[in-house]
Image (cartoon, rainbow, N blue to C red; front, side, top):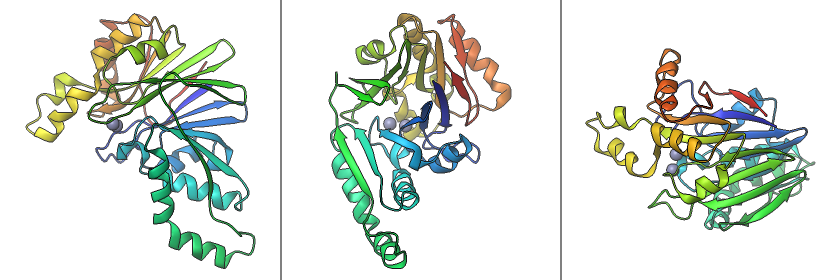
Length: 273
Ligand SMILES: [Zn+2]
Ligand SMILES: [Zn+2]
């Protein structure tokens, strides 16, 4: 299993970090978790494309995690010439969000059907709204959900994706909670969106300060990694985004709580399990 950090950014615009998304690749089975800003461009960089996707999994309906889902849907549709169906899984609310996206794309869908003889229908999506504790298969992958804590965003889901003996937990934006502990337990990789509370708390911007009460900070992520006894903590969605020479400082803070491997990097950083 390859875990590709297709977007390590956050809502804060960054020239070098795409919005949050993570790509799981096992042989020809590609699964995308979240679809933030620039996701299709980064998928191309990761040797993938929407047409290769077995499924899209959404952790929650915050805009930074879903704002380029429309590009995934449109690119999947056009590249399959309308013949493939894109399965999209997410928390309750996903159905309405995707349907509204399709309405927003209506004019474009009409233009392309009119212009291309090969296209006779619009995008085909299968939407599955999931609850906590749900388990399902995507080809050879087994996926389990658990509720996470990101209030007032509700409901939110994290995912544990297993292939044989290998397990990855991709939990999205959340405080430490029981659901994350369950998903991450003994995982080979635990991918956590993180903020640096020590740095963010220095900001004079009250809206930035607001993010502290619904994200895991770096230390909490490391504590969860230790409690869940994971092999690797993989950091993403880092606020504030670190420069490369700051990675060692982030790792040192996490190492105070967790003695396994800590992965931090740029977009397209890949963890192979
Ligand atoms: Zn969020
Ligand atoms: Zn976010």
